[in-house]
Image 1 (spheres, helix red, strand yellow):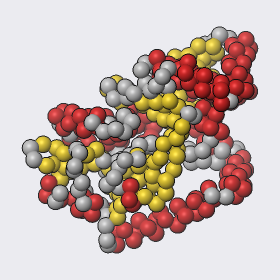
Image 2 (tube, rainbow, N blue to C red; image 1 turned 90 degrees about the horizontal axis):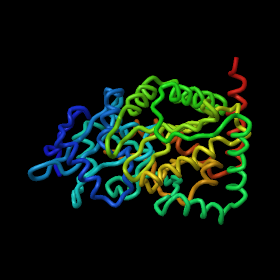
Image 3 (cartoon, rainbow, N blue to C red; image 1 turned 180 degrees about the horizontal axis):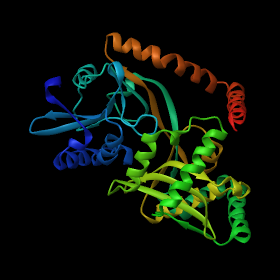
Image 4 (cartoon, helix red, strand yellow; image 1 turned 90 degrees about the vertical axis):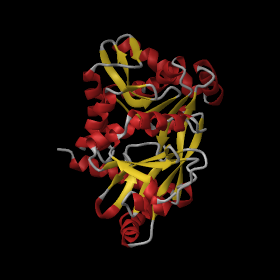
Length: 361
């Protein structure tokens, strides 16, 4: 496919016919219906990221594919929402296989970086530098089946978590769960808890970035069949003790920003929250909860399986590809070195937490 058959638009410039074609192409794939791969997510990012674009690939009478991305400085491109998006790639009609270098040229970028490229993206997977696991909870057969899996695999974990939920109710008031909460104060509480968690662990505070706060606000108001912002809250009495904001399609709940009030840490409210989210999702007909990449003890306890995602970049020859390599590859190699050595990773984690404590007033 030549570059002359690619039209580049801002996401909000897509017509409803083009958005519907995007949805049709996405529905025809075998991949889980991640809300991050829907036009609504691209449009929301475009409202807060002025460099967001969508390449519309034409073949014959109508659109044959869509590639959402962002144009950065010096011609360096990136998957749309990179850094917060948990599923990335192109949406293409069967048999449409553009030349990656030509596609990048049509997009006016010299490289296209991704960090959560979904499996099955045959156009870009050959350019991946690393493969990662994203952790999932399968509730396709109902919550009771999922709970029986947990009981068989880790009976102590499930028994202890449910006991803590009961104890929380006795100490702090009746426990109740709201799957789709519309109370703005609960979303503000979640972002405050999450910011504190980032700072406490020495991680970059995503909610210190205005565009992410604005993006979450827009998505909280998004109500589309395949991309709905969903705030889930666990209450003890009238007080929120844990919350999660994510996106859901008809079949996938993308777990995005979970956090809890550390005052109630001994009751493991985050684990209780995830169990209740799984139960509510199954009741809504959702079959998969995607907890995202990155190892964590709570994911190991809750997961039923893993899916592959990829990190890397497509580049075309030139100065831009060299700039991309110098800007990202040394850091990627350092991270890979640390991840491959558990003792080094543990030391690095402790160092981050120690630095965070020193920065506190």
